[in-house]
Image (cartoon, rainbow, N blue to C red; front, side, top):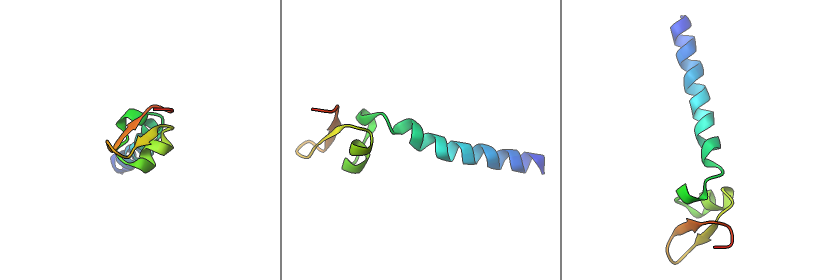
Length: 54
């Protein structure tokens, strides 16, 4: 039972940690929404995210 609860807690922690770690990295954004959320500037012509003011 302890193993099951521990596994669940780890899975839950990873589920919430992954989006939080991505939030500030505009270079990894693949959509306009992700880019804006990360504080970047979306280039419609190239479909890429660049740094703010790009």
